[in-house]
Length: 77
Image 1 (cartoon, one colour):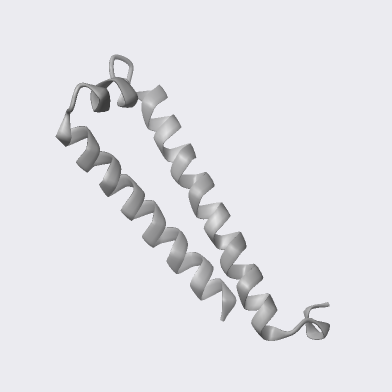
Image 2 (cartoon, helix red, strand yellow):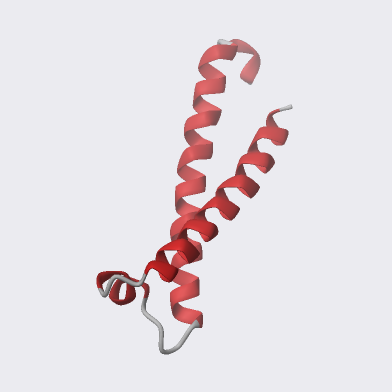
């Protein structure tokens, strides 16, 4: 099926789909973390200026992004 599609177009399609999947899993990770921790609300803590929460979210996003990037990248080979 993919033999009739230009490889360059197919790579852009894979990259776009991988980006959407990564954003979805980042959102899912934040939502699940917010639900698992009972007395902790990420948006409230960020609005209070809690820098540690921002750094924690940054680490969460970097970890999920790196893991999914490797999975998607290696899946293309």
